[in-house]
Amino acid sequence: MLKNPAIEVIPTGQACGANIHGIDLSQPLDDPTFEKILAAFAKYGILVFHEQNMLPQQQIEFSKRFGEIDIYVLSEYTLDRYPEILLISNVQKNGKNIGLADAGTTWHTDTSYLKRPPLATFLYAKEVPIKDGVVLGDTIFSSAAAAYDKLNEAMKIKIEGLTAIHSYHGKHTARANLGRSNRIKPSQEENRALQPVEHPVVRRHPISGRKAIYVAAGECVSIPGLETEDALALIEELAAQITKEEFHYHHHWQEGDFVIWDNCQLQHLAVRDYELPLRRIMHRTQVKGPIPI
Ligand code: OGA
Ligand code: MN
Image (cartoon, rainbow, N blue to C red; front, side, top):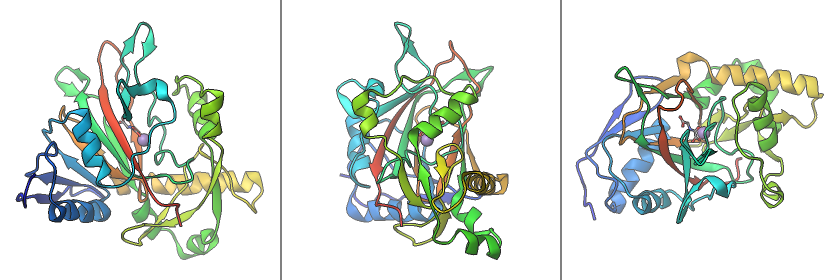
């Protein structure tokens, strides 16, 4: 057990995110240290820990401190013996993807098509694609909370109290139309867990209470009470607001990076600028959040 390690929280200097130094996440943490990490998580939205060396079980144990582990719906892509860990990877074995090769290829917040979408996602870089000495496959994050703050008052009033319908199939149809999806189709049983759900367009953060826009283009297919055309135009407009560069933190991965992000206040995009034989292997865990309010 690590007792009161001298951790340092260093903001990225961009619109969101902080680096955390001085901690080995493979070790169990004492409660005061975990509380510091949780407070930094709620404040900055993304925490980056460099040079970590974690076994799958250690990643699972650390993730569990934040809540109940959410097991990914497509069991085909989870790690052998560790269903809690989802492989994000372009690597193939016997002609098949070993993990999700299309994760995050459009702007989104993770699995918002669930009734209880995740509070946090944890991504651990096991192998990163390197070309001519440069690591490819960056992830770009954007603060949907800062984006909400900067909306004009008329828009804040217009969207207050609205809800949107989030759909797994909406998201992946939109990705496929852009040529950015190549995953297997969910089985009938998996499809039962993938019914569209309704969430508020503006949600309050479960820890800080801060408001954030909670819609994603493609994934959000309608807004009850609005004509489809008006709803889709509003979703596009809000998505464009969230993804403005002024709200970004750009993460350039190194092997051993362990990154946690807050799905209640951020969106993110995977930059898919590498192909085999360049390999990328990431281990992902995610924990359930509350029903958005
Ligand atoms: C994810 C995701 C981004 C990346 O795993 O949810 O969006 O860069 N990943 O792999
Ligand atoms: Mn994602």
